[in-house]
Length: 363
Ligand code: ATP
Image (cartoon, rainbow, N blue to C red):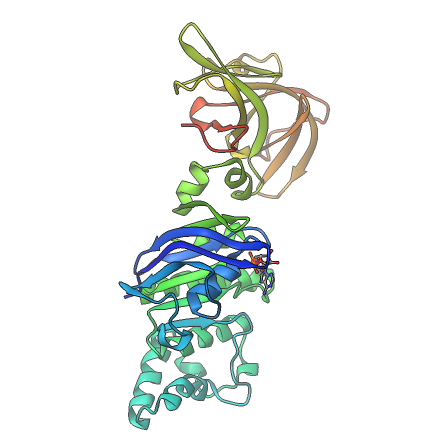
């Protein structure tokens, strides 16, 4: 069990609305990532879920029960802290046993439960070690195991990987995702790192200025970002964004921008100013004047190569297109000279359009 419902949850600090009317449902077994830039309200939201901070308004429900004002210890939620908060002088086994000893569980039952959890998290061989004799990733697993012995309804984590170096972060990320699949428990995880969100989450709640910008699966956020903000936040290198205008003539709608061949737009949207988005991996480079440079559908943008960057597996080609700088990824075998005149093309199905005023996606 671990189904959580947030209903118009808000929290203010004086005149700062840290969390502003967030509603969403977390299903049992979800790996929910609360994602967004620094200061968007992720930690405040997690602390309200954990019961460490009272909401200013709104309600919280866990498995059908209203827990809005329930104290933290009554919530059956386990917070796994960034520092892992393990007792340094106790062995792993004693660290795991600690929460059960406090509860007054009989010694025999404690030993059985510790053994069971150690097996689930694959730390049986580490039980006699002290925390300082563990790697960062192992410490992480012990912290999760210690939370697990209490059989919580959900695990809450606030940037648990931020203390680790890049290599260990990747390994621990994979380990955490595997652990989630094995346990089938609900995880709620705070990060500002979109790669962590894309790789581990079953659902992402993208926050901006305390509000929910988009809620969906990683693929939904990547393939159909709901706003210019979501489009720019998800993906590295970031989506190319440029100003354009939707214009209609003879019953069809076209996307117009300087340097852009007119593109037919399938939607029946009225004329307006828009932002056109194209991911770097969807842009194909052609030498200007080549036959391939004139697709019949989709975008074709005229520009000049400004800079090429070799990433090893592929290269990034940065191009000047009018007043914009666009980035395309392309195979390393292709040679593009700086200063070369090019056409960047993308099929119509790969174009994203957003209303310029509201920033919201047009369908
Ligand atoms: P980060 O990634 O930097 O940790 P965050 O997304 O977790 O950021 P929060 O820590 O939730 O953001 O903060 C959201 C907003 O609320 C920020 O503007 C922050 O300054 C403010 N805030 C958070 N806690 C307090 C507090 N105790 N008193 C006053 N303002 C606070």
